[in-house]
Image (tube, rainbow, N blue to C red; front, side, top):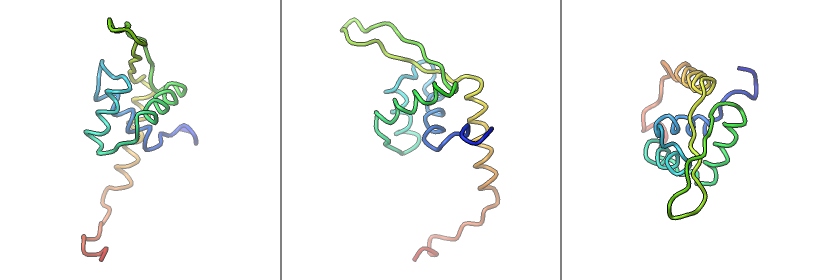
Length: 111
């Protein structure tokens, strides 16, 4: 991947959350996956902005669902593209390579 095409941390987390959420990967489901699995609370607005950015990069595709019988806007659902899966695999390899065999000091080292 060229510079600027690599995933940032939040982009990788959102893309992974889309995969975990599966067929129901809308903004709310992605947010739930991130807070549950990632232990992060980036904010719902950040999730939506990141999903749009991933879509602009061609890493996810979206579809609009049917409107709720209660009214309101229809939800938008996301799915990773093959390019998105490849980008996430590259992100994983980068972190695994960087962290493999990394000697970490014990907890007492920070005191």
